Length: 345
Image 1 (cartoon, rainbow, N blue to C red):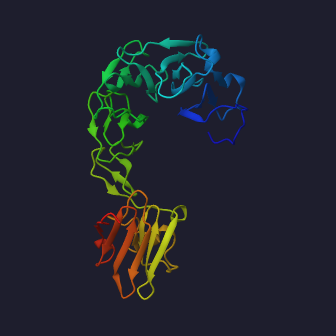
Image 2: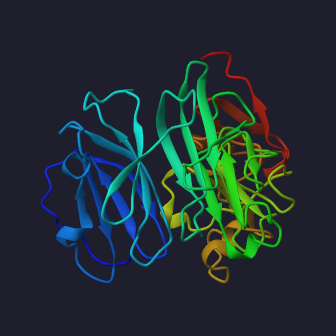
């Protein structure tokens, strides 16, 4: 999927959803489902207008979500469709498209409408479905292993917290036999590798996490203002990972002590520190990693990064770093930062 941009001449609303397989990218634009491939330019057969392809629905119908089989032709796929044309939070229905015909798929008993759908990313049949919808009691999640013929309720780790991602790697199959290498993730809540039967609490705040495709025990996520990594599974513990590529980070403030050659940078990705800023023998991001520096500095900043930093001109160990939720102070150098309350100022 590395081709250039292509105009398809549709005066539609913004993209409402996407799905990617080994063969295609599917793009949802209002009432259109568009199949995109590097192999050829977009043809008429790659554009599906659900308002004309699905009998009896409103001309203003919108496609909300899609789950696609990992096949060379991109079929079958399952689409969640708002058939009312009234937009908003109206309940949506589920349809299966086999490449020729849309067929209605019955929702689980008690589900008032569907909101999102996933399928096993490595499955050519797309028979394994995870459907999220609404009910009288709130959000509900169901599993089907036979293409929607039968549904089983899944209890997620926290009420009304929905699955946001379904990942797969062939290297996970041996360690995830129940799901054949598939992991379901509820951000800030849990990860399941057995089709929702059990959940491992994810040791992150309300942020997404990604499992390493070679080793599912290596999990990468975000916490505070930096990237964090666990090498012992989703539960953690997590340690902050070095940030590389300062040229890709907005620098808000540079503070230095000329006599000591110490530099601190306030950036949108956290606080950076180095003693080798002007040392031409140390190149690239080596300046910002041990033994010369650190980026981001632990225990400083939040999701918005660092706003400003200042070094005491008479004491290079005394540094103050400000950010959106307060400030941090050290009197012992880069390893001694402690948060201070801002008292609502």
